[in-house]
Amino acid sequence: MLPRRAAAYAADMGDVIERSCEALDGSMRRALELAWESACAGSLGVGAVVSQADGAEVATGRNRLFEHDPGDDVLAGSSLAHAELNVLAKLPIGHHEDDELVLHTTLQPCIQCLAAIRLSPVRRVRMLAPDPIMRGVERIEGVNAFVARRWPQIEQVAITEWSVLALLLPTHAVVLRSILLDEWSRRLPIVTDTARRMVGSGLVVEQASAGADIVTFASSVWSQLSECVHEVQALSEVHE
Ligand SMILES: [Zn+2]
Image (cartoon, rainbow, N blue to C red; front, side, top):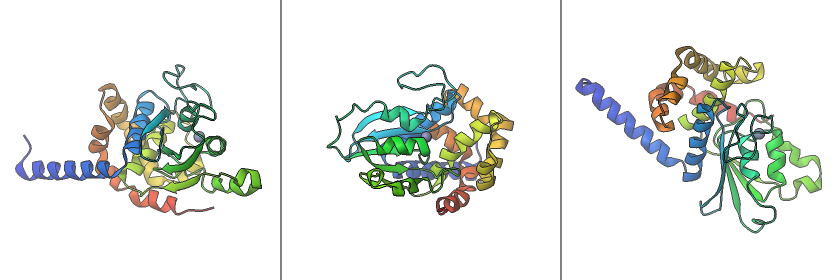
């Protein structure tokens, strides 16, 4: 049994984490769950949800880069198997043209996903974390008038421990597979060190095997996530 002071601290932290989780909207929470599912399955750990403007879920998708079975998604086991492409692939062409569709993603869309979003019915993107190797990619909008037309509005949500977690999962995956890019670790040295320690301790693999959910996992590493918030905040302010 925990000493009284430690038990009170744990209860306080539980409240902090719960309130922080509730501050995310429902679609982003669902995207985070999908990111955790992706990480547990050995892929990059990114999730995406398309919803209507009122929050009603339309479709979900997750990264399946290192899996062979697409499950309820379309793409798996290729460089195309990104969360955003998997959710966009479920939107019937023309069907939602009049809706105000919003895509929620745990990581800033990469160059291929941004192009796919432009050609989709989605008009608004909300992202939980910036991508260190894709800063400035949204300037593709200015390439010509056609591309600029119906260009999606892209919004970075407030940076919190959940944004750190959204970056920690893919960082952990690439450290585990020894495919970490220098550009990534240079922009995120503290997140990278944290991921390296977790690869060393086997914590993520252990919790994934035990069937932990993402809130349980986040709770077990919350103080480490808090130490990285300023680094992710600084990255979000880089506009190249
Ligand atoms: Zn992508």
